[in-house]
Length: 127
Image (cartoon, rainbow, N blue to C red; front, side, top):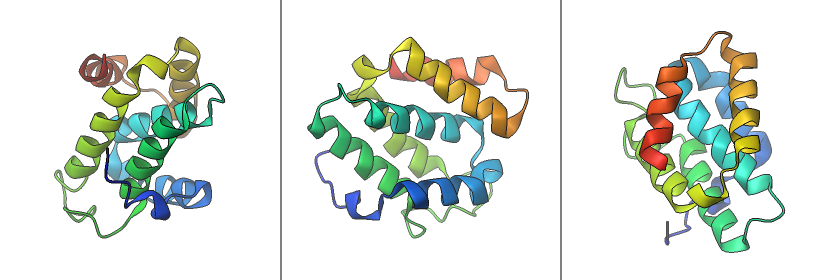
């Protein structure tokens, strides 16, 4: 994501607030993508350029007035998922098994039983 105009909307506090308020409507796939990006961004070995791209994607996710209104049933998070997927493919080499496990663990804390197939479907698009 070369255009980092959304970086200014990212903060850890805003991210957790958005997930807390909208995780059920966003769904496990979107939240898993967010968590993968978040944990990659926290990795000290990841280059600053990648971190800026991640911050832009997460900023877009946080921004309440994105291309498709997030509360629109079924399609409200499709644009967010597209942005997240693009960012995930750009940083896929930095997504370690440990990062996947952290994201899956946090997702299980929030959602309980999660479909491995649904998460695997997202991972197949990334790698």
